[in-house]
Image (cartoon, rainbow, N blue to C red; front, top):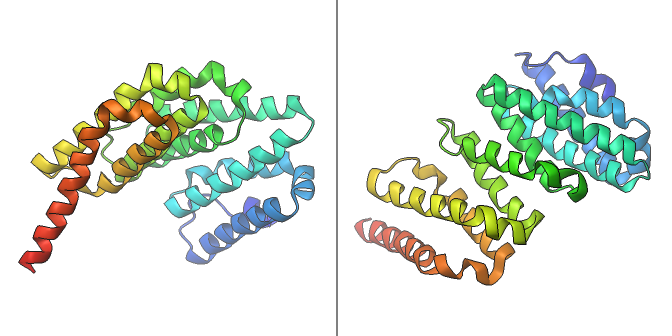
Length: 240
């Protein structure tokens, strides 16, 4: 699988080669699930080979590669080799900065996918000094023209709450929740980015789960938006 992964040129338009690349990623993911010890013997080579796939032209390949990255990060963290773990965390941050600076949809999306996996990796000690930077970079793309970028931003938001609830509540929660509520209102008034509604509501639900009673000041408006959604669906059914 690793040979397949490294032998397929990135962004190749051949359907057969894309399937081959995708299959290699899925096989390596299965290896990470079922034989992490074997995967660890090849961890450097695997991570090097998947970095470019994180920026593939196909979103499904980017997303499945990110899942493989997440599993590799777990393998790294659970092995008694902090130097190796720190080396790759630093490398991934550099890849994220490069992607954000490059600015294409694929590169921005890949950087957000990496953030998603980093925040899910339980590398709290290594991420803590960078968390403000991660938040600024994430929220910067909240109104991007690409739906796939916006949706990934909404997926990342609750992970800041999961990473450190106290810090999230004191520094980020008000900004994120008020933006989500404002976005829902804009959808109702201007019908702008209505396809994001599910992701916004899911983000609010996940934030509520992670922050507990701290969601109370925003609860009435959240429930109001949910009720409006059901009211709208009921009106559509009656018209049918």
